[in-house]
Length: 339
Length: 233
Image (cartoon, rainbow over all chains, first blue to last red):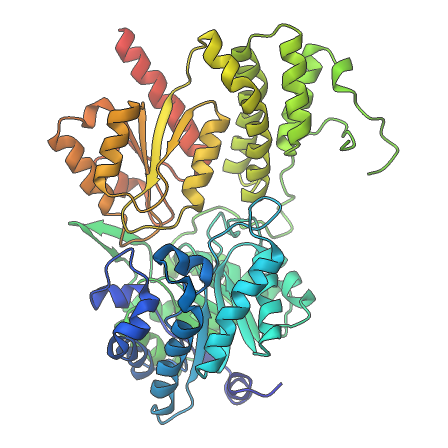
């Protein structure tokens, strides 16, 4: 399949993605609780500004302001009837900014989780999930997104439902999960599990990886876990700029631009091809990351100790992968057949 | 579904074996088996409160520990909680009728501006699984909602959840309002949510930050026991 992203991946051995969407929009006056996607209609100038901040600071790829733009999330703002429109607008604004950049820049149509838990443990059926993602995908496609970009997913079922929907929309895609629970996703998926899952998906993504989660050290441990599986697909690393801290009534992320520059270079050494930030990653972080990626040489794949030394310790001792980690199991009594 | 295991007939197990089997069935999220087990114990003359604490809460404690230790994850916990709920539905009216002691109660909701509720729902379910009564205020709660619910339900605990760094400071607004109105010390305030940490919990004046739903249950038990001790002292 030829598309703007796979073309760019053929000519470059690393690409820089963007940083935070929410953190930047809040700085522009978005109040918490409001749907950022409504701004695609109400404040197109601010959304273009958001995209430009990424492009001007070196991003080769930026994500559209459509993360919560699915019917299930927009319903909370009584905007579920505007899915197609808000996604189209978000992508159109992105198209304008990317086409004016003077270099190839990818418009990635952001697709976040539905926020619902899928059957059998939750209430969302596979068919409904596919329909929800498909509707959003069509809007993004209509607006001119180059690829679709699934992110912050924790359940494999939801990832697969999105993949199916993107096939219906006939769009290339990238999909990342959020590994925030002792190196796994909230639903227990390890980095190795994800590689296996991605390999088995009929409509395979161009790239896969990790975003958000718990600090940059944890994220790189996850990337090392992906690389250890020997995958051929592009690995995405989009980590938060450190950890949120509370100061005088507001929150800021403690990751400095210097730290994020180290993180970016180390992410590349760990095996990531597409490197960006997530929450708390501001323009100054991006520009430091770009400079580091351009000027610093590639190095050996870092060890966990080297990552911890440079970026800080891990949030958990292990991440559910590795030889020394026989999964702890509870002693069970004889099982009864479900009657 | 192999045939090399004989079916276990719950009614043929003695009390101790049955409780052990119910621990396993809770662990595996087998709702019908839990409902059957509860009924058998009641039929054998167990007090509803004893069924709750020894069979159900006992089993959910194991689930909680394994969730905390990274052996179980959210899907398994939700299934276990669902099985627990089946048993609770049988016990609830009986517990009320027999005037059984209460484990404690909690009002919980995500704060104003925050619509992310998976974590909060998980805490609700685990708290119910531990035998607490939970009043769930849902998402996006302004301070007035919390205060009204405290007034109406007089819970032991107020639980607040936030998933966004932009909404977590609102927890302080709620706590500050409670202080202003002289209510703060009447309640145990527990906070949680992905971006929070212990330092934040202290900074805003909560009693404790709970890393996950399992920790929330343990913390709640500890604080409620302490509170009851103080009251009887």
